[in-house]
Length: 342
Image 1 (cartoon, rainbow, N blue to C red):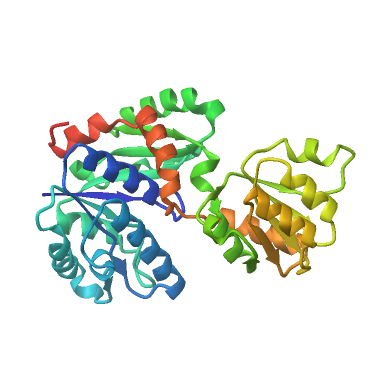
Image 2 (image 1 turned 180 degrees about the horizontal axis):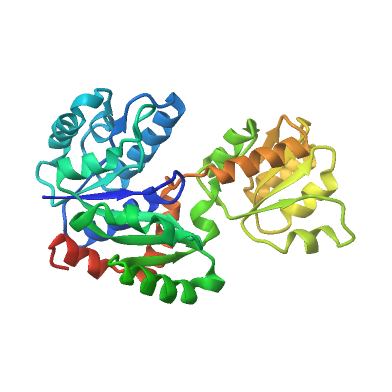
């Protein structure tokens, strides 16, 4: 049984997405896969809820039987961290070929900047993959990567602009190789992986879904603002597909125009109930209408904040993730590093 530790220097880099992609690939190749995401003390309850959400998602897609509390145990005793990690790990590792362990770089609050990741990797004798967002300053972190020594399998660069993908793959691969570090993949940006479901959108803007609640799990790929423009409504809104359209509640004309195009949901700002004609048309088109309490500016700001903190925990994103990783991730190098036959 092998522990594979996925970590990063910062939050919201794409660790859960990489865990999901690797887990599904290993599972598809007949491996028995587990998941483990220990919580190292004294973090905010909202962060624990987010971690629980990630664990629930991984539990679902990997068809795991262990309870969430086993997959992401809270460990409060800093002085016996290694022993507590081993004890918790034992509960979820029986009968598995590979345990995917998701973590962050610095997990201990206050005091000395002790790198809990190093302790966890040593305690589990884990192999390590580091996930980074593309940056021109990436090289400055190489020494930190190399501190994992023989445990380090390599680096994954995430959210690389597509226009720079070939250049980044070649340049960073050579730069890392000179430092003795493998580049396992350079994954392009894709809006589908970093968007929201209709339900998540409604929650973030404190809105109420007025109809078609069964559509709440669908993904919103684009956003448009129903601003004043000289173009006819359908022509303007037809520029983007699978979108959420934010429109002032007192503009039924623009709402109806948006409904004649590829729209995933309609967001009405200003807490104004839609006209019956709008709601009837939305029902006919099977488009959810979300009633937002705030004005247009507040609603847009809430959406932007939600997009900045979106998480990879929707099953609808898996096909796109699989496609991207099959094209741009070196699974063979990971199998070799783990000593597994592919």
